[in-house]
Length: 148
Image (tube, rainbow, N blue to C red; front, side):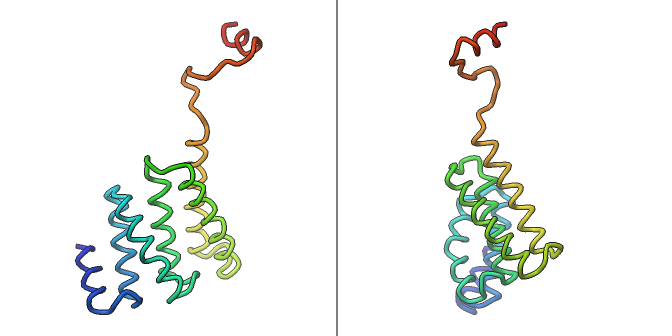
């Protein structure tokens, strides 16, 4: 349904209209909910630059598009470490800007902080090897401690 709304808005209003951009964001959010991250990411990579250019980087729709985009990164099990780092770096900038412009208690600033925490956690989980008994024992002290 949201795909049809987005397609209709695109045909009716063009890619730079605020309602088209809002429909693109809603469509991407729906794709995220369905865990169709590659499709959502592709849509956001196409529409986010338009929103930033037309509406500005701190417009409500642009910020929500950013959230949908980074969610495609930190929720996707196939995201690379570079993808996760990009999500964290992007959100650090967005959170700083949102706090400066809207104040730290504003929903946009809080939303940026929420997604920043989620992306940092995803990055940390991916960077930290699990210790399910497969750790590499490199020194005699490691061996002695492990086998005790």
